[in-house]
Image (cartoon, rainbow over all chains, first blue to last red; front, side):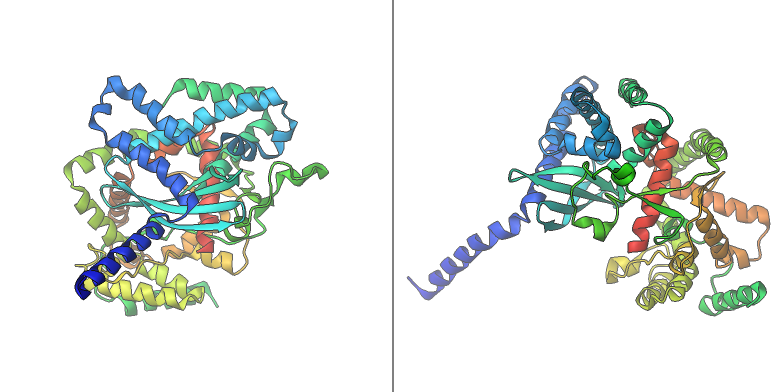
Length: 201
Length: 275
């Protein structure tokens, strides 16, 4: 083997070694990236953009989000001090409703970024908790910072909150839920979430 | 120091800083609309600890300290809620009945690149607000960046239409305003105010807004009140045309839009201080 081919071989080996570390930015990032990749495939698939396919498209986005979002964590944090006062069946019902409420928002938002892209900026891990910072870059170049908060459960990372422009989704709902629970009742809260979901966007 | 002296000083500093650009323009309040630090007005609310219950809904989160948002749920007192809600309805109708249709029509005529350029132009005129407030907060790096940006964008960026400082030199804006400055000096946020036309604010931010007004080029420009209002209106329409749909998204996702916007405002201001 000539020196040149050895060099080339060495270069190739070093590439092989270098690629995996640069591709895997981190487990938590990979987890979020998998969801956003799936969503972008769905919203950029022209065959899914017709009104007849809307239901299928929505379902595909929902499945992608379901794979990495921990709805019980979302619900627990959004109800905060009111969580422990609920019975198991009430909790179950709430999780299911809150999930539908967030999905509505998420789908509407994802639809607006059909011409844009997602950039992953950094990942911070501290024990069981992680933050993945990203930004949505629209077709006009406008940047929207989106941060994901993750928690590790049985070795798997789960999203439990999303921050859009620094505003926490969970905290935003917590304020609203708290306001309703203080002024009214849990039954009323459930009723209002149901109405909101049925009304559609 | 009397109010008059401060005003004169601010006016002189404006004159010194940009003699050629005084006529025409308003500062970019949207870009400069930011922050107040932890203050007595912001109640650090930890619901789980009320009534002596253990904080069972939440485990430790190491990012709490850094981002201050999860467990310490930020709220603001709202003694004017009935009035604020009335103005929320007013602003909502103003948006859907007037601002949105006009901004839509305008965006159909003017290309996005042009509207972006106009936004940059207004933003560039907001330089004195950001610069002076950087100085008042002893953020000298920020003040330096702002000065550099103003210089580069006013010349290479063709009177501010192109953000050359960011694009070519990677120098980004430092969004500081008088509300943040006062907050840094230890003044509390006070209570929530939802102004007609202007939207979400607080007692402190309202004072800040009034202070920054004297740094706006339009304040010193020789213009009729009607002209200033028209310019402000144009700036608002142009800005809105670039974020059409954002208001609708948050409103549609909310169970109680009024509370959702109040919370988003407080969270947003809180994040800005940390920057």
